[in-house]
Amino acid sequence: MAIESFNPYTNRTLRRFRPFSWAKTERILSQTHREAARWRTSSFAERAVCLQAAGRLLRERQDELARLMALEMGKPINDGRAEVLKCALTCDYYAEHAEQFLADELIKTEARRSLISHEPLGVVLAVMPWNFPFWQVVRFAAPALMAGNVGLLKHASNVPQCALALEKIFQDAGFPTNAFRTLLIGSDLVAKLIADDRVRAVTLTGSEAAGASVAATAGANIKKTVLELGGSDAFIVLADADLELAAKTAAQARMINAGQSCIAAKRFIVEKPILKEFISKLKTHLLALRTGDPLEETTQYGPLARPDLADDLTKQVEESVKKGARVELYGGQSKPGTALFRPVILSNVKPGQPAYHEEFFGPVALVLEARNADHAVQLANDSPFGLGAAIWTRDVRRGEELARQVEAGAVFVNSLVKSSPEMPFGGVKKSGYGRELSYLGIREFVNQKSIWIANEATPSAHKTKTE
Ligand code: NAP
Image 1: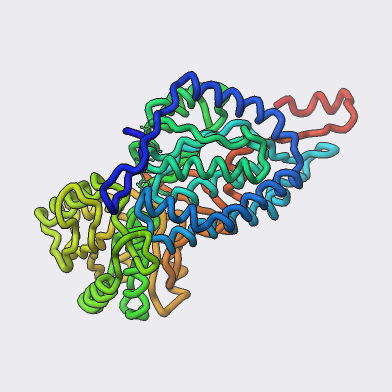
Image 2: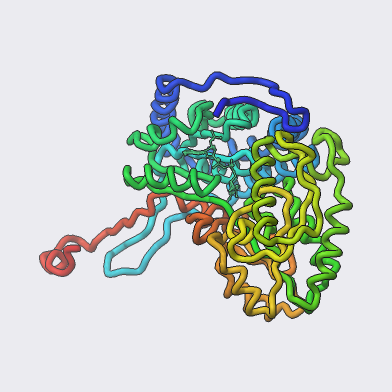
């Protein structure tokens, strides 16, 4: 894939970038590897000063960065600013808490002193997607840098300017030049990088196919991976829910980032007595949303990030309709090869249709009918994915009980699914493994080292345990 900034709203290429050669990539890898040996010796205080500065720069540059996202992948400017501010908050969060999250943990054993220390691994390669070009990267980079690792970023090929802006932020914030580097490379060089001993771990956020390929190479080279992959999140609405609020939130949850969010609500599983009314309210709320130029302040959803993504989504919708899904609302593309995709609602979603089994990465709401709450959970779990889910009910105790039965990395009761620095984020099943954010995220890329200080060596101490 070419590395280029392509504006999906105007259908124009803005800038093309020459991909780095392997020689250049290898040079940067060796610079980051050298830096890793130094950065691991820095103090938490030193790292925190740099990360807080990165947070300040993100706030200062929010307009410029939001503009880049609008131009490169069609995100409305207001949403772009919010994304940048969330990145800044996350920098503050890890600057403040990393030392506590990675503090030595004393363990009571027969030793005089035994503990777990958390030590950096070295160079961590991050393969990232275009849908939240700043957030996806910062939620990896902030904890990784605070843990004493260094970062190598291979961003999606359609957001090169965002990728370069991120490198500049970390450098301007005072991090050593080679503590965070952007590689303008295609996915063809990723396997070679993973195979290099100087890369110690890999994190990928993206599709199942990319995750499987990266994990296979990492497995062959015995490297730790975190995979944040796709999702087809269930949004369960029980008959006793606040229907108006549920439907309004459903529209919002489906339309985040023009529907291109891994944790966007995708499957709306609704109890039969309220199904018709839910669809009617959802339709009203979806139709009320304004599309337009992502650079306009009033735009609520923009085009999809690339025209080919809209073409693919149209195929998924058409195939599902051919196999029995019912069209309740049809927006879609105005013509093939264009990125704008207006909201669609499909009902009568059944096994055998792409709508039942696949992720729909755009503004298509898939509605499934549930006989009761248990059936709703059964439908929610009948998916290859397990990223997030929402349950709407006035009985919050029942909501919590059902939340425990849903196979997902996160379940929200009476709220849309969202990420925040304090709570772990990640999936089960085909949505991936490992966690980002919270104290769990920062512990993914550290050596959890056991340190055992025996009592002074005595013959009997040697005789006891040898393993
Ligand atoms: P994608 O095509 O998998 O691309 C993601 C990244 O992987 C890009 O940098 C891409 O590079 C690279 N890549 C693709 N194929 C690769 C391969 N075989 N080997 C190594 N690298 C490879 O995904 P996307 O279309 O950008 O993003 C959408 C997907 O990401 C959706 O499924 C969405 O649900 C998922 N996602 C998950 C999360 C989460 O946290 N769980 C968050 C956001 C998105 P190129 O651009 O150069 O191809």
